Length: 612
Image (cartoon, rainbow, N blue to C red; front, side, top):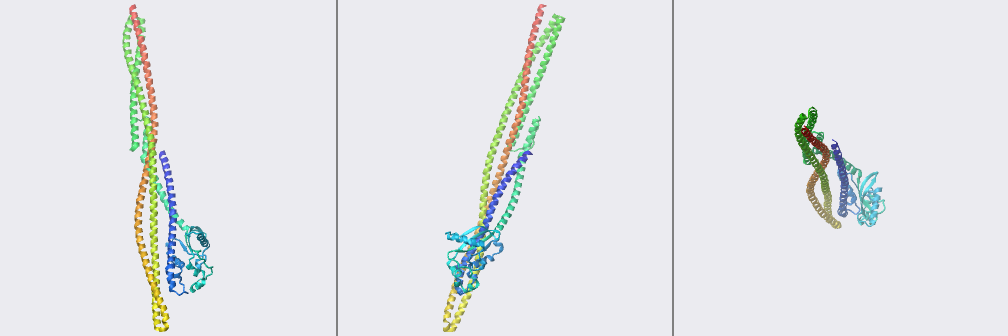
């Protein structure tokens, strides 16, 4: 359980750290991507408004000016800023994304376009940029507007010569314009920036979008972290912790003397090899201990026989002394017989003691061999531990390489997703361009209707002039010129309509192509995502393998400690065997001494017989 807790703490910490780094990275990418999307929307809005103003200024206004009386001014047809603002106002609110578009000026003709202090500051900045020779008159940044942070994109417009007659010299402006606007600002200056196209994006909208995305990201990250830690814990418990626990219980039982215990459960890989090695070691140890017990019993039996022979010799000596007191002849005869028997017994006993001593030495040698084998096996276990550590290091390197591959795939996924988002944004922008072209087409239809009505009016005027005779001839010439101008206008509007139709058709074709590209990008994203998942699985498996190998190294170190304890036990058995061999040697020397005494006794008996 302690190993489980340590592992789950380490694995949980690593997963938490990795998840935190991943979430922070994704969070930064999402923040940048959301901000970029808002900028792209603002850029597209500015581009669309510029297109509207360009069309009004280059196509509609010249035609309308040619059709209208010099003192007439139709704002809807001849004012570029008015048309752009009306087009923006006509857009649905859900398509504006809380973005605000304005065309402010420091010297406005329309009071509604009067620049605020912030806008006036930006226009002056753009004017200084123009005077310094910069071509890209654009400023981007964050400023407070009415106490609220806004991301602002401001693009300056240099006063064109065609604008100066109306904006610089009020007396040259059409009468209807003079009557409509107050002209209470100083004249505009040529080649200066006194007006701009500005887009406001409330930072609160960007922050709200980012906050919602972050909440979803943190929830998904928390669920993923808990799932990963739980899966790793269950896998570790099943494959490492539980088998090591069973091996530990088995080694504890062997340490307490239960050599008949069996290891229960299933083992895989290196743990199965370790289980087999431990069982083989215990089996050999069991055989050596049984052999040592047999040798010890045999030595004990021989020692008892030697003691019995010594007792018999002592008894014979006593009988010899008694026989000497009773009668030398009778005693000598009896002693001679006893000595003969004793000599035979002592010779047999000496042979047996010598055999027991040799067995004890043999046992000592076997125990020494067992100790050497245990030391070799311990060295082998240590080598396995070192190899397992080396394998763990190589596994960590493999994990790092797989992680690098996973990061590369993730970067590819992010890049593809960004391409997909840009493709979606471009497709939406093309759709908006088609809608704007449709609006321009409607305006051209209105102009075409006006030209058609003008043509009819000119025709009626020519008819009336013809009826008037000579008096209406001059008016007939004017009516004919008006009719020709109306026909030119109709032809021009027809060409513009055809161009707009071509734009719409091209836009539809581009939208279809973008949809096909989006599908292809989506498929590539899915394939890259699956590749990333596969590499993540590889990283997990390699991490699990590294942990398994480290656990094997730890287990082999513990096994080495158990082997050291077994070596201590074998050394104790070797010491006992040495003591037994030494006792047998001493017994052999004592028996030899006893034989010498018996020989002396035989010599004494022989002398006694000769004296008789």
